[in-house]
Image (cartoon, rainbow, N blue to C red):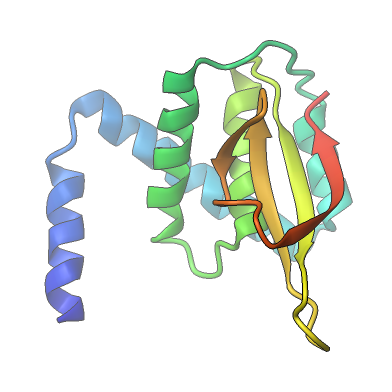
Length: 145
């Protein structure tokens, strides 16, 4: 069963237009580089590299959707591409185009003894990556400015 779904995923990749395929490859490189960077460097040090891009403008909904699609699709091919890896990747891609965003970090409420953290990418009050904020307590936002 898993093999068939893998084939369908690959068939989808091969059915992309040229510009979509190029963007997906770019996202794959960024997600892989962020994953490696988070392995080698601390989160704060790696995040500082992204914030140097000094992004200030708001992205269009189309650009936010494109980044969300590209990062989520690329993350399927990168082992251990966590929510934090994806959020940083999306923030980097947006910042390269001058678009501001925040990484929001929160913890799940009522988990008992086990602490579960999650990261989201938010731009202009729109959740780009990470899903719903429901059930999580907000800890901190890290902006791209």
